[in-house]
Length: 240
Image 1 (cartoon, rainbow, N blue to C red):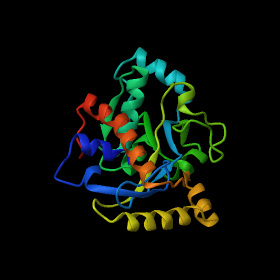
Image 2 (image 1 turned 135 degrees about the horizontal axis):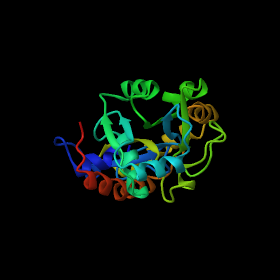
Image 3 (image 1 turned 90 degrees about the horizontal axis):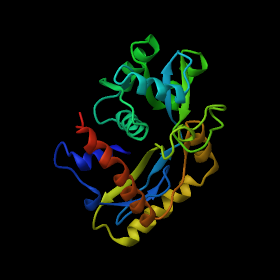
Image 4 (image 1 turned 30 degrees about the vertical axis):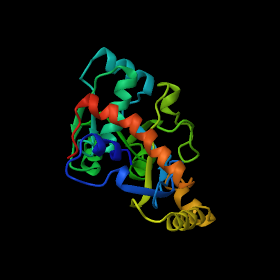
């Protein structure tokens, strides 16, 4: 996940880094694998959500610029992916919104529905029923195209060029694992991700299996670092 980049920038305690592990295959973001097993996946569904007020992403930006700091956003805590998603949005739009960190995304969503929080970035599976019941309004998806799971909701990038946020998962092994083992694990993970029932189970959760080689996984992780470390450093972010 993108917290990998944050931990790299601000390690809370000694822990393995990408130099100490090897990716084997990717599940959602598009690549996965390095010197040892690694597999990852990218979620196609992070959404910008506003409490029941009928605001579109463009007017949200306008309001945030007109009243710096008055609009707030909730997150699962400092250094969470919700937090990073919002800070990237702020950086690209030149807006100032006040961060309200919670001890998890559930209490943040509760306050979002109650109107105590204005905006939140969250996963489809966490908020789909709230959107369908009209308690929350989806302002945009954070992938670069509309989704069939949320028809009519535009990508944030249509208003904010360059904005894209996905969640991904991977399998990693310690550096030094023999290449034949990495290759074998990589093959097994890719075969699993290619199964129709795997694809469907992921699809209904807003997840798209991608897979790939260990080299592609390593390149993807490096690319993610380039995106998220500057965001974390600019805000002085610390992981809770």
